[in-house]
Length: 289
Length: 175
Image (cartoon, rainbow over all chains, first blue to last red; front, side, top):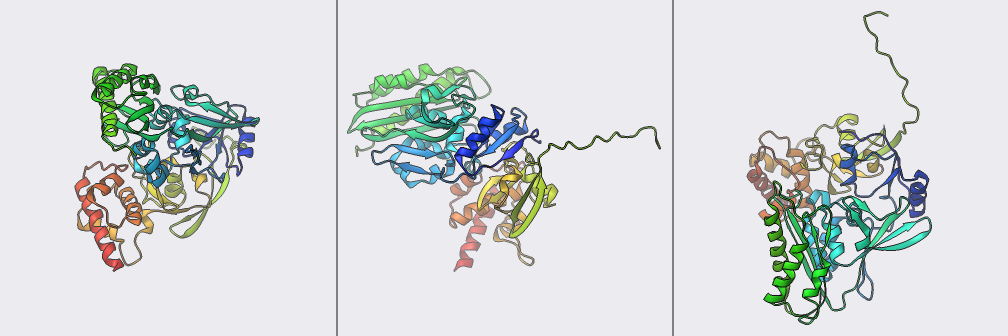
């Protein structure tokens, strides 16, 4: 399969890249990891006039924790960088749990975290993770930078809130008030298949008490599902069998699964509740840091 | 007209952009003029006539087109050839020397790790990426590392054995 014809530029600076996007007036696409875009070009689901390859722009492949604990992930951080990062494993358990479950190990060497969030695939692991973590995207355009909260970023399937001349240069995850806990579970029939159901959970713990929590779902609806409301079952409480069960029921109620060859809608909703319980239970038995 | 029909040649469109690229393939610099939409796998197979890299599913699933790009495994059907400009690539053709098979190739031979052989180049390059990072992998680690590569003969058992065999030989060669 061949993509349709397009012009290709690989600028060396963000300014040039934004200039190219601006000049193309909406007919350009940004190429980062390309693990979603290139297949879409080949299938001709996408046929931009121009590709702006950002891979040659230096300084976008950072994973940093600010002094206050805020996590910043640059636009060219590949999935495998997160999977292998010792800092991520130590300090951001939701991302650490999700990273090895993204696509397959070869796709993970190339695909990017920020690109995946922007792609906003209803099955995507990172958009769900970012929603559960209450993160935001830093977009840079001709007029400078702006922050877009995740709840406003994913507009629907494959649709995000970026303007045509903006680049998502960074994903930001706010610092926890206590200790960051959480997890990510995905049911897939085989590696690389679309998820039957995925659940992202972030927890912010002070001792045994939950001071913050976030939940999001992938694969069980027409878009990434924000289930952060379910945090009300846990905030200010301890993780007990009762609070966990109440929270799992609230999250599962948010799912909008459809019956298909991967399972019935009842089954998928049950999986969501089970995954929430598993992640919360695993965190309830860990010793407080 | 000399026959009943004659193809009408349309002049090539002049606005098609062509880019010159140079890529180091298995240690040798190769150059080509390409359209930006040319995929890396097709650059290797059609321009450079290196048909060891296979194009299987063409949809980023099967991993038959796996090569090493700056040392890391990638699916070459899912990268544009222009993106390889200035980078180094290793393909299955770069594994053996003139006289000797690479231990991974030897392992595939010893353990009968191929039936039709279509997935073999991709399996071997993914295995090479694993063994460069971890020369003492467990069976589980091998299965995870190869989970982006599909074998249509479902001969996974022997492929895993072959990688274990290669790891053992490569460890022995180090000592």
